[in-house]
Image 1 (tube, rainbow, N blue to C red):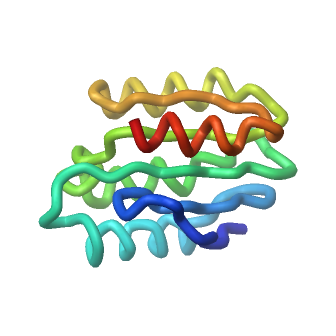
Image 2 (cartoon, helix red, strand yellow):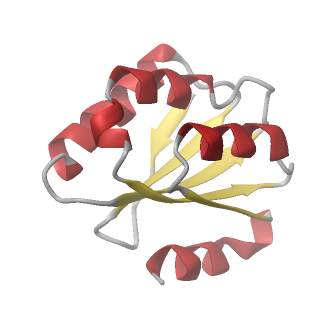
Length: 118
């Protein structure tokens, strides 16, 4: 399940995952991208991922396939999780070669925001 959380940066969508992302979650993210970033250039995602399951990024992947033009503006992806999601993060980088992806531990949330805002 996906929920939006307050963002500390105008160019960043802040989200929190619990479990597995769904198609509905993908639609929510895509709607925000269309409304806020379609004409503005780059955007970032700050994602706190709790209770990770192997298919957590399925929804994001589905959303990207729906609207590649908007997703090509995806600049940085900060993933905050107690589990290192190497396979999924590499997959994201392969889909979007210009995307900068970085993993942070749960106690590094401030560092993740600093990296997003650089």
